[in-house]
Length: 386
Ligand SMILES: *Cc1c(COP(=O)(O)O)cnc(C)c1O
Image (spheres, rainbow, N blue to C red):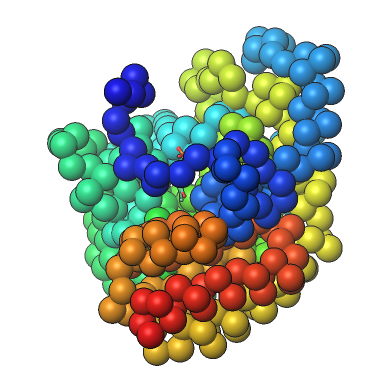
């Protein structure tokens, strides 16, 4: 019997060691990891430079609390701001917490500036924003809310990529924020259209609505830009980050333009662990390692993997995604069956909604490792469709 609460349906696999793009089980089997802990270990397992930062920081100082100044937190905020849209940053420990912070920012803005008259937050059908009470309420998937009814009542879901439906809700004048993923991760790698995002941006400008992009999965280089919004000529007011930011060390962040950030004044929001010495030291290193050169290589390797996937899945599925945030919406075969077969070939991938198999290699993956992955995928294709 297990003393761990039974909240996950886990695969029957356990790993004891990692090295770059590979994970090893206790029998020494080597798995090619195209899951990266669901877009977390973007710089590979047991990354030497990250490990050194962790060791050094552990020997120096782990935590003092946000009662005192933390220079590495200042430095990290400055890096995110300068490589983003010039906002201010709040640090927390996870994606859900980053979205909670964004939701609180939207609420306090609506309450202070519009006396609570504007209180609704619009999110998208098929979205995923987390498992806390506010973020499961924000999530546009019934299965996430099931059993926890009623959800918070100020979230309204509209179809993704559908401007008219969005406008229909917003026109009543009681909406304070719109939150969306530029590419829906859990929802099955559905991408927002450029024209749609431009229209949403223009609508938010016109009506003073906060535009929040949940970049918890798309951010930190996964799509070939540091932030996925940078593929579009559309700048949000707020972004949320987590997954890849600490390469496995927990850290989340919410960045907002200054005119909104100032509404979260001292005493309005806090986190004990948020932005501590360890997390900030690691995230600073992660951002230094994800430089323009690496991002360029992510775009190139992404195009290569995508073209190979299109070849081998021709007629068997639709290849989706951007950079190394790729996946295939399978025809005829169940995504979980596919992934279980892939495990037999010693390769990992992640399921998503819409019968999608996500392929998230580390951003540091080599071309040879991509070729190895393609060979393994082909074997499974031949088995399941052959
Ligand atoms: C994973 C994810 C979250 C939740 O992050 P946690 O760290 O698990 O709380 C929120 N939004 C998106 C888009 C995600 O992919």
